[in-house]
Length: 122
Image (cartoon, rainbow, N blue to C red; front, side, top):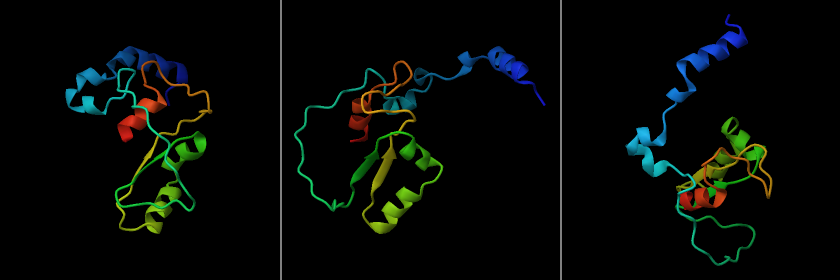
């Protein structure tokens, strides 16, 4: 068993600098959303009514905090969404992040804000 201090020293020795940067893989550049990503154009509010009617090809983006982030570990909600609307070819993306609040979204430097990520997901 490696002691924690030795393990950390090993990580430093092999280098956190060895972590690849987006520029190292130009074929993946289109997936990078950073502070230079386009911001969405101004949009008008869309009138909605409940129950929400999903249509073929709709894209659903879940935003929030730990509740939806943990959906990666327990994907029951997404599975029920697909099971309840078979044949619609829905696309579901999760942009949830632990500790997010309405007016606070702590992210690493250069990550891009929520609006840029939502624009990328269309």
